[in-house]
Length: 116
Image 1 (cartoon, rainbow, N blue to C red):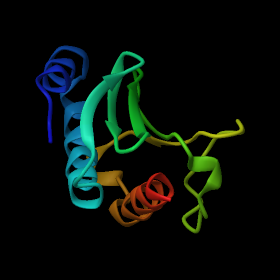
Image 2: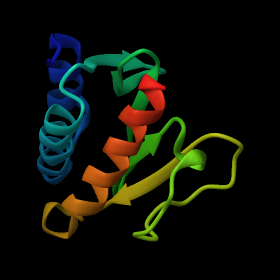
Image 3: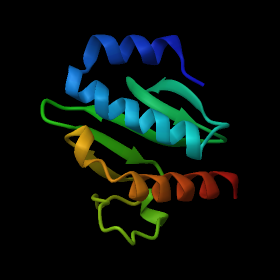
Image 4: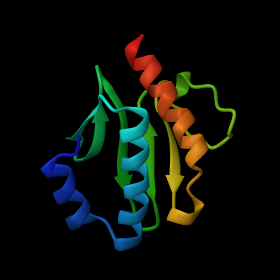
């Protein structure tokens, strides 16, 4: 489910090419986490199930998709970055370079951990 606050964030804060990338992330989250709510958390768009699943942060050159429990993921795709105790992230620069299969896998792992 999308929220007006997220829609406002996207239109006001993301560049057109970032909006394309965000649309893909949004589509994959709807597919893989249909029960999650879109919210603004820590000033950025996020998805919440029982807990926070993922959050998107913009920069000048890319979007960062951070998975709150990403450190617990199995990363068979080798795309996750980060060294903290909990979060791992993927940098998304262009819509045509988004690895949809990898993101589906990560979203599935996030949903499974959230439910468990």
